[in-house]
Amino acid sequence: MSTIAAHLIRFESNKRSLSVAFAFCLFFGMLGLHRFYLGKEGTAWAMFILTIAVIGTPITLVWTLVDMFLIGNMVKEHNNALADNLEQRYKEED
Image (cartoon, rainbow, N blue to C red; front, side, top):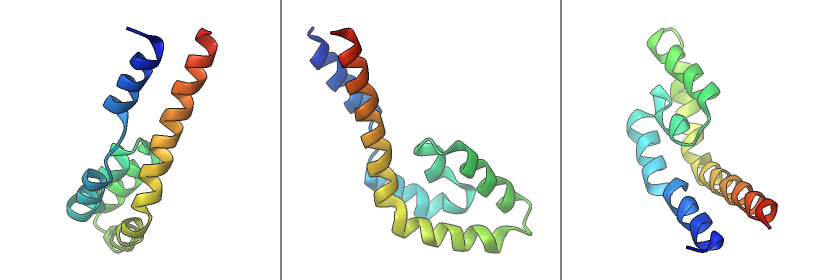
């Protein structure tokens, strides 16, 4: 298998879907599941802990609503970073 094909397969298997990310945000947003899905573990844990602590629930509610508008850019950012990483690895192999 060629190197390009291997990188394309790796990209396809690791890219994130806007539909899945939006569904996670819509149904489990206050727990930060959409952020875990997109590799933003730090802010995902912050949302999770604030929600579990109950006192932070109003904060995570607003945060989730804002994320619903930003989710498209967050998915694009994740997929572009993945593509850039794979492109860099491909150049290093040449």
